[in-house]
Image (cartoon, rainbow, N blue to C red; front, side, top):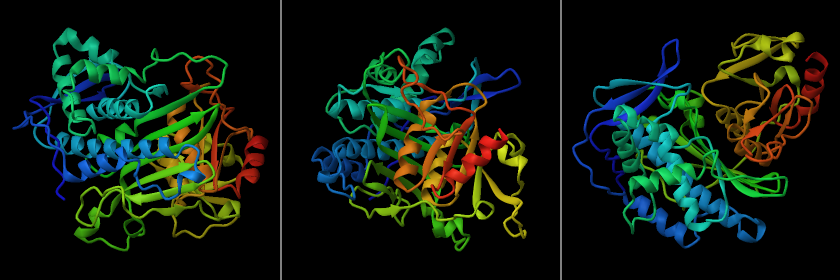
Length: 434
């Protein structure tokens, strides 16, 4: 089935950060020749399957208390990945014109579009479950001052309309802005009582998304019940297959062998499936799932370590005991560790460990608090793949520490993500040298 490209309205925009003063820039793209909202047949099939409760999860509902929620989340994240791919194609075509706005972060049309899309999809089936997410519409509404708001919201609305499952009613700009704000900081107020809520990172690794190359980025969605992550989905359109990752196939055809959807449910394991078929088109919900496991390395100096691209080895307490190298071909003794830098956001590293391509991810917390959406879905995926996630003291991440907003977590020192076998050894080494 052909995948129809996204039709954005005239003047499509991308928000990026640049310059020493960290100013936000709007990349205004040339007009698109059409504005008709058309969905591919595969998208229609996905809608029908999801509506019938048939989003082919790899385990029966009897085994999973949150089977229905996970099915809806998987369908929503898959749609969001389609939105990302189509928006990125449009952003990379044509001449870009730049407009500047004051801000501190890098945001794209796809960030807002994914948040609005997933918010709308979840509201259909679970209107009473609140959403905690990264974005809100304040910056979109405030951009009225330089007359760019209508153009930007048009772009976001078009992206959402081309991918939303419910097409029975017209989607207005206000609908899109309200959907974004469903996950904003003022949308829900929690207290010390147990709560059920979604946590969304619309695009983890926006810097990677905005690049021309195939840098990783992740759409991450998790369900938290009474302070515990019980289900989650990560979608990564640029994830390379094992064949590409191992450099076994450099053919043109292999470029389609990318994209992954990972799901996890408490007690049911972590599972993956391809996002694309052999023709480079998005697959449907009936494709084969594969059980996913962390690697089995049990020797500290033989493990593969994953670091954030904005942190150096000497920032990690293990550097007191071990040297590091990024050269896989270099012989190593027990005093040297193999490290690699996985670019873009934290969820990309969780995905790398859960899939078994790295044994360990060590993150130093540069501030007292970290954002919950950068980690929540990663926790359930790594744990269900057989791994372990704690702070540097070995304590589980407290998702309820932010009593009112559930937007911040406060790990001591940083976060340690491992294959489980190495966790106690590394925790002791970190505690002894931090």
